[in-house]
Length: 348
Image 1: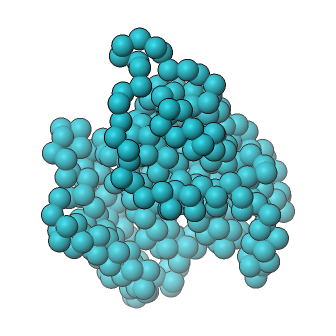
Image 2: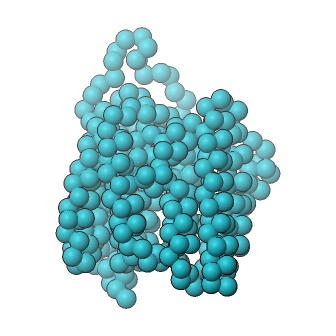
């Protein structure tokens, strides 16, 4: 892709998100979301592969549907209450519709079905943007409207953690596994949203760091299926021995970074007398943990088959920058001791 066009598209992505962040008016927020969608579409379809084009079309249709729902709900809100301010949402009907529209935008269950399909059709770089940056603007809006309908949030959160765990169990494609992992993590964030928005933000940031690191590892190994991971020993032995730690951090095992948000969320849910919800969420984390362990097993405890098709293909040395990978990997593994600092920052 032409560097100038790429720069314009990335600028459009950044601008769309910034407009949504900065807006207090629904039309402006909607405009930012639309700019975001339109800027990433050429990036998604740049390889002109039928799969990429299919993924782009699916993504465009779901995002357009969510944006139309959002616009409809904000117009309904203006009609019922006479104002367009994001933080002045009073009527339950528009709040519910907007919550569902934003859930569709970020891919929360039960409106998640597009996310694994879309992610599977993209290359790892655009998949990374879709899994991280594209979640920011909708999340900013969810945090601003602070939905009052607690039942719908808990249902969305629990279904997402369960489906995010279950869906990834039988997958062999890494991008689909990462999509289900994304759904499960978003479920955790939505569960605690109404009780502690700052904790949701912390969970989102740790999820970004861990996902960023995982995508970069897969990109360095040029891996798209579990079987390809078995050949990564010859490529980068040290990185291969660190990768299971990143994956287990995504699964939320102590003493890794990913344990911090899960621990704080379960603590918060227990404080709010939602012991059953906390138990279901914790059990669903075990489902996710299974497929992270499966990836770790494939990477570190299996040898790639030694026949002609399975021998490690000759690879040129990678041109990928290793500094972002080094920083994000360190953060994905080592930040748990900062938990007291995080809780001090979260305290109202």
